[in-house]
Image (tube, rainbow, N blue to C red; front, side, top):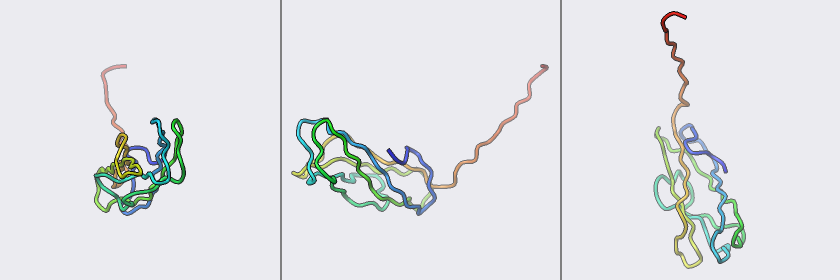
Length: 116
């Protein structure tokens, strides 16, 4: 929902990534479920964020994580998964991916051709 892939940030900039997750399973998610950082660059974020409320099957929930852009230029990605009340990771990986460094400057090329 927020921070499209490869969004550009200055080193040390604070930002919030929000995902909209759908419960496509058959059991409800409770507040004992959480979003967990699994690998990549944590970008100063928490190890886990609990769901704010129950999510019945077929429903969606928005989950936000406050992050800070790393101090090194380049592409940085953090991978997350859901964890149930039995501490078992499930579902597919979802992620945040940003680019740290100066915003690229577009260049204009002029080509000369033969006669008009």
